[in-house]
Structure formats: C-alpha cells, structure tokens
Length: 172
Image 1 (cartoon, helix red, strand yellow):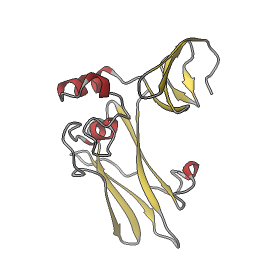
Image 2: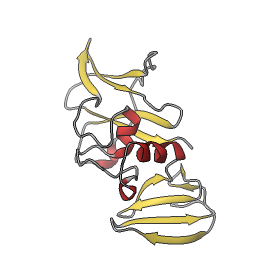
Image 3: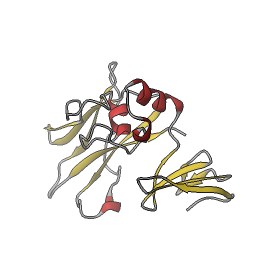
Image 4: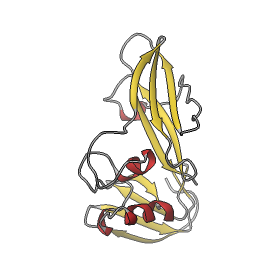
C-alpha cells in the first residue's frame, strides 16, 4: 500500500509492468522515491539508480531490457542480482552465484557484495518453498563482509528442510 500522497501518473510497458509516479514516498514500507514498478500488481522495485542503469548500458544491455527484474541474457538471473554479485548481465551462466555449504553444524551461504554502496544485501530463510511469504531473517547471522566483499551468512542446522536465498534491494 502507498503511504499518504497522490498518484500523478500510471502507465504500462510491453511486459505488463505498471509504472506509478506521484507524491508518495513508500510502498509497503519500502522507499520508492515517488516512483514504483509493479509486476503483476506486486511491488517490483523502486526506480533504478543511475549507477545501475549506467552499468546496464555499459555492459551493452538493450535499452528495453535494463530493468532490475529483466533477464537480458536469458540465464534465469535477473539484471539486479547479476549487478549485485558482479556478474555480467550479457554473459549467461551460474558462475559467481551464492554458494551454500554445511560447516560445523551450520548452513552457510557465501556471496560477493559487489555493490555495497548502492545495494542492501539480506539472506533470508524458509522451511517451506510453497509459502512465498514465509521468508525471514530470524536466526540468520548475516556475517561481515571480508576485505574482498565476500560475505558468509549462517543459520544453525535443525530438523527438517531449510532453504536460503539472497534478497537484494536498492538503498533508499
């Protein structure tokens, strides 16, 4: 839900995304800088900052495929995640994705923070992949980035399944 303010403009693109502009500053408690993108009615991201858009252009991503959730090289990894991990948005392949492992009774998840000045990185867990709203940071040690930006988040192993993913968002 948008906070108090006005919606001044709404438009759509060929992918069915809805672009909303106005005097609001948050959507579902996330800063939007007066602009939001909805994909299927679900908040996709606030407007991409200049650094992200510039990186997409420099990498040769076609102008109509530079959105955060676009996958310009069709490798199943959205542009924002490739940018966040220092991967090429035009070169397909899973190399450089977060690596899970089991160490000393913990499920560990290591990844590179390639853009810490522009992005927030949070590891979340769930025990049930069929419940999309069950992702949480509860019980996760988010870790501290090493000098090279590699960060390892951990969560104690318990009984039953445990799944981890990396949520990356633009800093407000």
